[in-house]
Amino acid sequence: MQNADMNKTATRRLIVAGAWASIIFVAYATLTHIGFVYSIYFKLAPFLMRPEMKTYAHVEHVVVFAVVGALFGFAYPRRILLVCLFIFGSAGFLEILQTMTPDRHGQIVDALEKMAGGAVGIVLAWSVLHFGPRGRTT
Image (cartoon, rainbow, N blue to C red; front, side):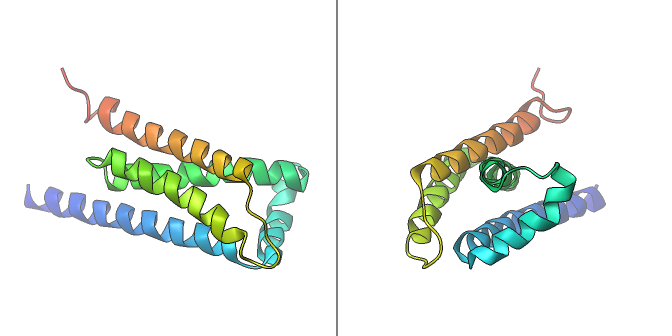
């Protein structure tokens, strides 16, 4: 029993670390020079059937924040309202900060896409935790 508790604690710590690492990476990618974003696009484009950069950016906003939202939802399952506030707030705050960089521009549409993706990730995490095999209540 003690070994199972240690594994559970280690897994939780890993998820928490992953959640914070993901938001740090997103902040870096959002605020760094635009060339960084283009380099990621050009590496992924062949695997994604070469979408237009604008299309790629819209999808990327939703998918990345869905992953971040899910990680935070799994990391802090008992604080789902706080997770929502953090994810939505960071999406908006990062867009505001992006307007202060010389080669980037924050847009409301981008913030809304990130918030929608974050909401999808949070709902997914919450659903797995509450309706998954171990979360079912009878």
